[in-house]
Length: 323
Image 1: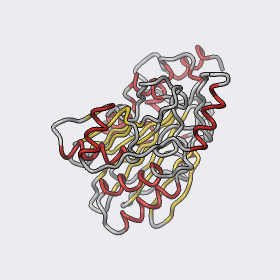
Image 2: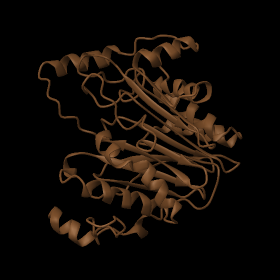
Image 3: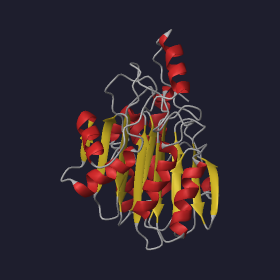
Image 4: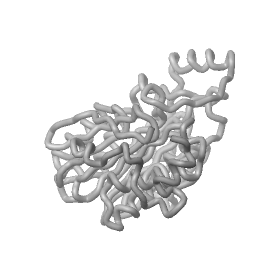
């Protein structure tokens, strides 16, 4: 279907409150829209161990805020994961730079951007939230804050990531593709036994990005947003497009209006693609959780999956896609 006809049929030129293409049925998503239950943990992509870690912490009555921090730290220290933390793919100049954000059930938040040589940016973000009057620190200032708060410096460029970067230097073909093999974020949402929700998002960003580039992950409302009265959302994919639409905030606001997490993710995607005719060339995916424990997910291209932990079961689920 041509984009012009697609927009006309789905009403994308309006407020973005219409249905998706007729070939897509929301009833087909019943297999992963969770019944009301807590605690529950969901995570972007196939980060099995991270989601299991957070889920088991929730089962042991750990708070949602502690669970999301400890959960994503599993991938921040996983040197085999080239999209987050230690071993992350560097920028085009060979530097591993990290972004992260965290939000608690009290509405407070903290984030860090363009951080180098610190393995756990999510924990730095939490300390910014809890120990400073600020919400975001970046670059050298973020690094100094981390060192002053007990974090140890560490070279995050692994031999494997260096080797791949050196191969990239031979051609310098800057066409970042975000898919199941090459994505740039772990986003996690937890609902604990008290019914409180928290979220975390951490990344090493696009492979071979321009030095200094910051994506959506540390931007509150873009890569992550949590409102403990309503629910939370995280985003992954091409951060520049997510930032333009403040997508995670939009999803939560749609849930506030009474829409399900699934409907909210779909509508937010409509809004995003209506503003970029080249949406076929990039990937964006949304994941949402409301206070009932219901889950929603939607992406542009096939291939996005997410983890869901509930009732001691930790499973990887394929998201429905637009294309």
